[in-house]
Amino acid sequence: MDSPEGGARLAARDRAAAVAALSGRFPLADLLAAASLPRSTYYHALAHPRAATRPGLRGRVAEIFGRLPNGVGHRQIAMELRAVDGERVADKTVLKMMREMGLRCGIRRETDYHRYNSYRGVVGETFENVLGRDFAADGPWRKMGTDVTEFRCSFGKAYLAPAYDFGSREIVAWSISRSPDLAQQREMLDGLAEAMPEGAEPVMQMDMGWQYQHADFVGALRGLGIVQSMSRKGNCLDNACTEGLLGHMKNEFFRGRDWDDFEEFKRDLEAYIRHWNNVRRQAKLKGLTPVEFREQALRGAA
Image: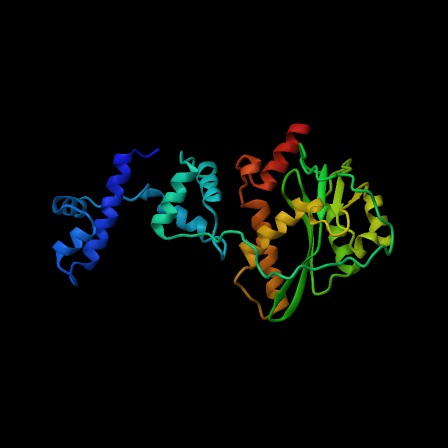
């Protein structure tokens, strides 16, 4: 923790920098008086500028930050520096470096994103909320979630249907489509069937969307040995883990961007999903990527 004396020195440097910026337009004596800054302190601060924090790491910080169009947060950068570069660096030190470099990652906030709603009432088979908001999983392929989210671009609308593993935080299968129909769900389920290891019997959380009540979807999950768990009507907190994933995606990948072509959008979104799975480190996984966590967990269980 900084001492009061250290904080006073930093404040004096900031005031000295402000006085120096205005010194050509106003008398120096008046500026020093307005800033409550002794002349000796002013000249000392100019002669001893604030040193940059960990200057040797700035290139790597800039490179990691620039991996995503909307930037990367300081915790992800710090985890990357520790895991890949072997650096001993605290999260707060990286945050300080980013502020000095003028790097600012957008903060998640309420937006005007349009939420896709697939609820049409009870049109097929419904299920109990087996998970009951208990999303904690002690390994991969135990608890999962799925949902459909909408993206509005210049070319029109696009929809993502992911299968998300709550244990490894990995997007294990997905489908990106122009229409949120059963064909999209079949494509996602085909990818899920290919990715699932033998013997896995996870519980999958979802809302009461018409797709998830359809006989084809219900039968496919049963065939895979997946237990279906449904949120209560109009309660997004019952599927909060998947909702959190989609919120991160909207902010890191989509916010402030647009596409004129669906295929280009699809390529970019799939590249982001690969980044999420293989590159993006997560504090809840102790600094591992989702794929690294899954591979370690399955090796330990073997």
